[in-house]
Amino acid sequence: MKKIYANDLKKHFGEEIEFSGFVDNIRNLQWVQFIIVRDSTGKVQVTIEKSDEKNKKMVDLINDLTLESTVKIKGIIMENPKVKMGNMEIIPTEIEVTSRSENELPFNYKNLDGVNLDTRLDFRFIDLRSDKNILMFQVQSALVKYMREYLYNNSFVEIHTPKFIGTASESGAEVFEVKYFDRKAYLAQSPQFYKQMCIASGFSKVFEVAPCFRAENSNTSRHATEFTSFDVEFSYIDSYEDVMNLEAEMLKYALEKVKAEYGDKISEVFGVNIEVPVLPFPVMKLSDIYKELEERYSYVVDESEKTDLTTEAERLVYRLAKEKFNHEFMFVIDYPADKRAFYHMRDSDGSLLGYDLIWKGVEITSGAQREHRYEKIVENAKNKGLAEDVKFYLEFFKYGCPPHGGFAIGIDRLTMLLLDISSIKETQLLFRGPTRLEP
Image (cartoon, rainbow, N blue to C red; front, side):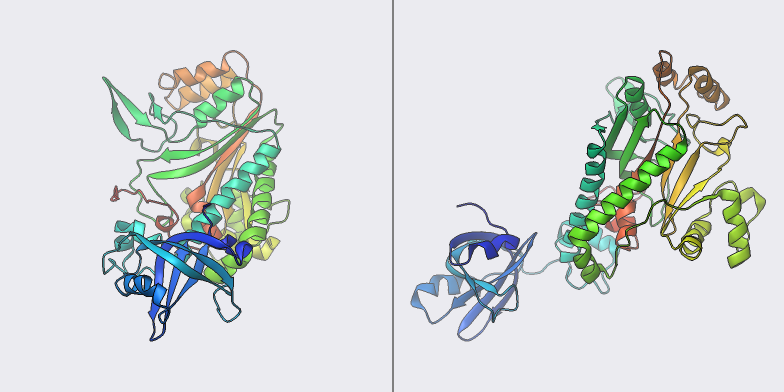
């Protein structure tokens, strides 16, 4: 018998079906037993009449059944307007307990008042059973699906790059060193070098969704030592503005699709109304932003801090974007070149041809036009003291490479902002940070 999920049960009224799931709740009344069984798509009521002699075996089984056990039920799915849960119920003919839960869970995942986040993460397999968490990962999956869909529709090729690398020099961030047989290797901080290798190979448009590793001792609500990155790179651009425009179009496309599919549920469960952004996204220079923040909100920082956005400045940029442009997003440009990676292109004046994208007061992207001219990128690498470390990478540009650019978005952080969740620890399936390696 074909497996049927809760969200498809209404298609089978009057049919004998088989349904499996967790025991969510049991109401054992004088004349009837009600069992609520759930799977990842929803819940259904199972109704057992105690007075019917043929139900005695099932009644006895339910009398001894614990919540969170798993069951397989055979029976008839019936339409019943009196049942509040979906106006339907299963009248069972057979119930099999496929696994039995211990009597008491480590905590009540349906009521997290007073439950420490670390306790939830220690028992993440229990925490993830909540309707809210299941919806969160369904939304995250849809978000990635629709960003992918946009790129597929625009002739991008999905690639899969190595996560063991031989050189620890992609950026200023720390890397994880691992033993690789008789030599050292490192976990990849990003697929940046290999994305650009594909561009030099003539692929034109590539992207990857994969884990990245940063050995940064950052204990904040938005950092993790391992995270999922959505990386994009494409060729034959005229300006970093082409990169900004593609990212804006992709995000608009994905958010529009997610809202159509999950908007009502997100509003009901998370209290968030997804705002589909309009194009184009607003753009401001870094120096102009600090001027506006000082004039509007009396936010003053030392000149030495104005080479990047502080955490508080990022937060205020959201307020500025809403007030000045009625928009949730803001592209920030004109960062000092010496603060960015050597492979970011500079113009003739030495200014950086790149940007950050701020959404809801948090940076979600660094993007740029890349340096594709061999002599220039060699010079940049030498200036950073990296020429020998990235020798293999510099080889990519010796034999012709088209103008190109790209960006990367952290999926976990994007989910956190989309659903207004306070910490990235909750939007990763299994969080990895400086003090957490388990489960």
